[in-house]
Image 1: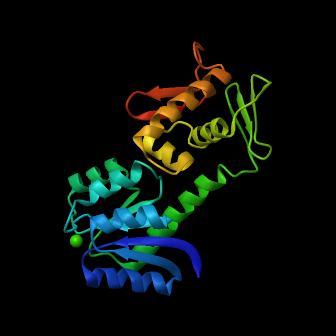
Image 2 (image 1 turned 90 degrees about the vertical axis):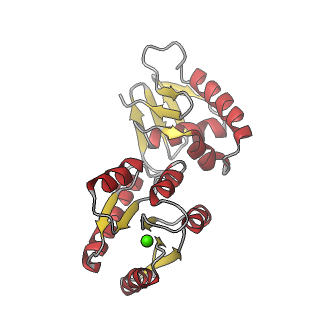
Length: 231
Ligand code: CA
């Protein structure tokens, strides 16, 4: 069996059956949800590698699910929808979907899009394996040795500060929301943890010489999260 796990979100049983039968033939693992609530629950608890998402669900609009998943994960989301309108496509892509397939679709096309999404996500993962080192401006991280240097000076970070820096580095140029960071580092999204996130971020930035620097590495997005600036 392919270890890649796909979550099918579709309220129409016949379409769900068609997709799951196709995935089975291609030896993918899959789980399915027939409504939005279950889809969000399963995406959090099972952490699938990819989501196939119908937009028209009985309890909520699919774009709400995309926003919910995007608040904490970059897992690929392919929308499968009967709505062929450009505005629906734009809305779904703007909310964070990776691709869009219009019903009726050919199963060959669907499989090709899944493979493309798979290639993109493994490219992202290859881009940031533990064994590589990372350089951005004055910052250098040796992922293998978990060692950080700034302008050639070795920096001593706590385990949490290191995890934070690594997370931002791996996603350089992208804004990471508070909830995604909390999920990744503390495994929770509690408001109370936001205070400790701010504290760790402040000490981390001090250590890498960020405050007052004319070339800060980490940017604060008030009310949203943080990003590492690419140099
Ligand atoms: Ca539907």
